[in-house]
Figure 1 (cartoon, rainbow, N blue to C red):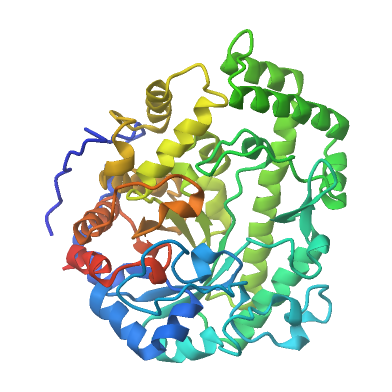
Figure 2 (cartoon, rainbow, N blue to C red):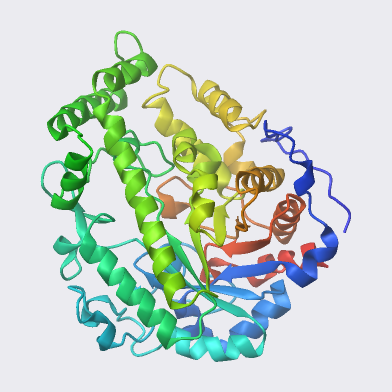
Length: 496
C-alpha cells in the first residue's frame, strides 16, 4: 500500500513533530500481514452476550485481529461494561444498559493464591456475569484461531467496595478516595497474588496493566480533559507519608503549598485574577513551596516502582509472557503528563507500550483541556492562544479552537507520535502499539456532546498513519461493545 498523503482538515493544516532525525523508523509495509500485532479491547460482557466463537470470527473477518486484550480486572465501565448509558447501541450485542455493573475480576479466582492477601476472591470477583469465566471460555478458542489473549488489568477502584479503606489513598483531609494506593504493600501483595493466579491458571500470552493518574498537583490544577473539579490532594496515608519522610520531604510544607494551590484554583474558576497573572502566580507558589514538586514526583515513583515490581514478578513466573503498560491520551496534548512519561526509563521494564493516540474523540478532549487550562495556569490567554501555546510545545501546528470538536485531530498525528515513541525506546526491544479510538462516547470524560463521528475511512487513515510511523502493531479501543462493525472494518482496509 502506498503511503497516504495527509488530507487537510479544518482543524489542522499540518502536524509536525520537532525532533531528531527519525526517518530510519519508517515502516517496511511488506511486514504488515506477517509481523504486526492487530489487537482490540473486548470486555467479558461482549463474549457473554454474543458468544465466543461468533465474536472471534467477526473480529477476524472485519479487522484481521490476531490479539485480544481482555479487561479481566477492571472497575471501569469504559473498559468492562456495555455501551455507556445515554448513547445509542452499536449494530451488535445486547441493546440493554448493564445497570448492575460493578466490575472486578472476570475469571475464576483460586483461593490458594490469596492466603496472605487481605483482599480475597469474595471481595474482587465481578458479580454481574455470574460464574462466567472469560479466560477459560476465550483462550482455547482464540488459540485455535492463532489469536493471542492478553489479560488487561486496570488500577481503577471504588471506595464503596469491601476493605477499600485498607487499599485506597487518603486525601489531605483524611478522607478515603476511590484511587488505589500504589505505595500500599497490601495492594502490591494482592496484585501479585492476582497475577500469579492468572498466569498459572490460564494459558495467557501476556499482561497489560494501566494507570492513567496525572498526580496530585496536576489533578488539583485540572491539567486533564475531564470535567473540572477541586478535590483535596491525595497521598496522605501512612505508607506514602513514610516514603516522604525517608526522602526528607516536609509534609507540613506540602499541606501549606496545597492550601495555596486550592485558593489559586478556586479564584481562577471564579474569575479572580492574581495581581501578576495566573502563570506568574503559579510559578511563585512553586518557588515558595518546591515541596509540591517533590510530592508530585513521589506519585511518579510509586507508579514506576509498581511497574518494575509487577514486571519482575510476572517474568519470574513465565519469562515468555509479554508484559506492557498503557500510557494515557494525556500524553498527546498535556506537556505535564508527557514530562512524567520517560519512554527510555519505561523501556527497561516493558516488552510493549500501548500508547493512546485517540484522534477521533481527541478533538473534544483537547478542547476540554484548553478550557480547563484557561481557568488555571494559562488563564492569561484566550482559548486560541492557549491552544497555540500547547500546540507549539507538543510539536503540532495550526489548530483552530472552533473546529477541533467537530473535526477531531488528523490521522497524521498517529504517525508523528509513533515516530516519537519509536525514537524514545530506540535501542530497546520494547514494541510500540498505538491505540486507535473507535466510536467512543464523549460523555465518558465529562465534556459536552461533539459532532465528530468515526467512519471506516477514519479508522483506515488512523491505522495506516500509525503503521507509516513504524508501529509494531495497533490496538482498537476503547472497547468492542461501543464499536460499530462497519467502523471496525476500516482496519482491514488499511491492511489490504
